[in-house]
Image (cartoon, rainbow, N blue to C red):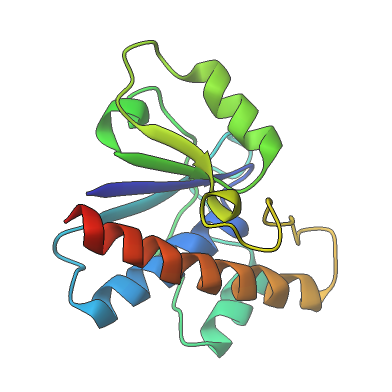
Length: 154
């Protein structure tokens, strides 16, 4: 199975989702059976590491995001991945607009798919440190639900 997490710039929310989910897959012994990546709908930060505040918040919880580099979503991603999870409605609309007619990937909002309290992962970029912690809280919860889905699919 192949999962792609998507936000706007691929420096806060989607790399956090990638790092957390990779960690959970490794702990469950499923990391060799599931490919995980992240990308942004915009190319502003392509090639750059995740935001320093994102990396620091993640590291405090045991998630190392230092190797991740931002990239932009490509049309091929709609054929390469089974599941593409957007962090918010705006990015979901962007993905739907660029999705080719013959795409095989399932598109959804990450939090809505798993019926969490919020539909969207809020963008912490312009806020304070607590925003990065909230993103981690939400993504950890959603990752548990996604892990359950992956187990059923495998």
